[in-house]
Length: 316
Image 1: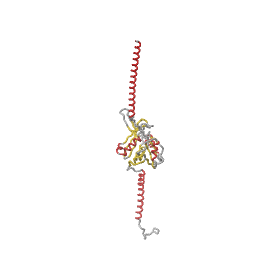
Image 2: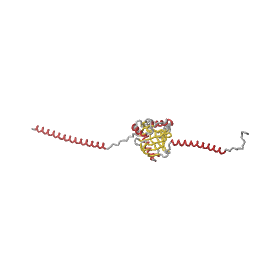
Image 3: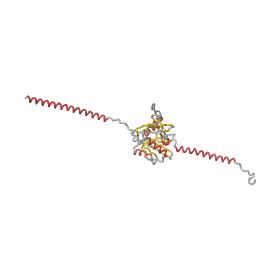
Image 4: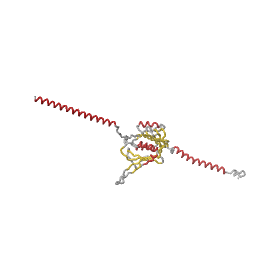
């Protein structure tokens, strides 16, 4: 009997232990489920909050020209292509009157900016700077063009390097200046994610306003003078090229057309200037001819009438 009672007590204690273990396991499972539910809710809350992503600067520029460009204009375009690694160069546009095709070309090349050089009479050069596809666009007259090969400056920079942009404070004084500054910033500012760009900043592009004209210069940044080995670091600028002057003519609301936002009242077309020069040269010719005619008239008036009683030289 004693052995039977001992066996029953042992079985009862085993059953109680098993029940305790099952209760603990259930409690542990419930705690684990609670923890997993809380983690899932936290993940959902994090996913619900939008992550602040860094905006990428995706600027691509389409560079092309019209028919009739000279060698100087072509070399200027090549210099700009070297300076701007995010430029995509296209072939020449056949028609000068169908500028509405340029937004389509920019869309085909996946570009959101356009620099279009328009040549007139093989001597006048105009530059269109436009934001695609909805504008605005600026038409400018290009003057005093000097390419890198002509200048032969001592400055130099790495091909494909990114350049700083420096704008004159006069841009902020006028509305057209602010718009031009913003457009040039997006066109000439090289994005860090450009395919051909290199992670170096060794030159600076300057835009200055003098006499209502935009003067473009390109300088190399030299951080230390090679002649002075010791001493504080010094920074100097050496011009590289190219250089040119832009005269704003008109700013349009759309891309290569639309309503006129700004018009330069002081701009005179090069054809009108050449016509005025020819008229001035023609005035000298007219004055000379009028003087000759007046002289002949005076001679006729001073001539004396022939005397009938005078002896003829034939009979003398």
